[in-house]
Length: 203
Image 1 (tube, rainbow, N blue to C red):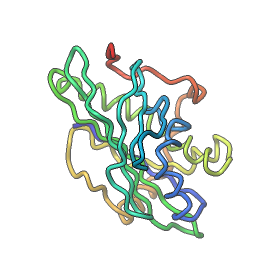
Image 2: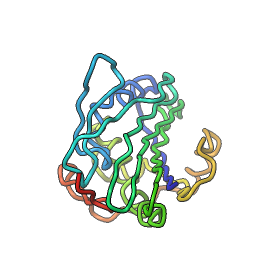
Image 3: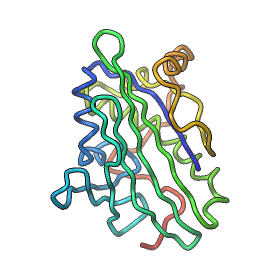
Image 4: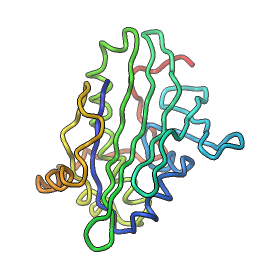
């Protein structure tokens, strides 16, 4: 089960950032795993969204909501000729220096069928994209430029293939920050130009 997580420090109150993250309709503005999203039904936590490479909308549900510290969204199982995958987007927050907050941006993908053999490829794609997603979140919430956003993002080694799903918590995030910001990412495309994520299903 590929898992990747990065951390970003945002100079806004944790309650404000949580409120923005808990609204799934905002994911398409910065997250590379969500091309488009819209709320459906009377239940506030249910959405329809498009995953990169798919033409049809899938169900996206908010499965965890613990203000103001944790929120998670889980997509429905998506079938491909090689098997299936089911993505989950996790966010954990806690207060940080100067009245701001620290955000763990994580992705987990459950794979089935022959897709299990491709977990290194899936993990590599998220390792490439998630730091840029965290930068885009920072830019979206603060209006800052790309250089400042890059400096706010720190990586904590990817957990691609399993392991502890709970994350290291604030102390572990602090150790990750000591390692310094991630190296500058390669130039990323405009947020409207979503990159292909292997494999591209037919549905």
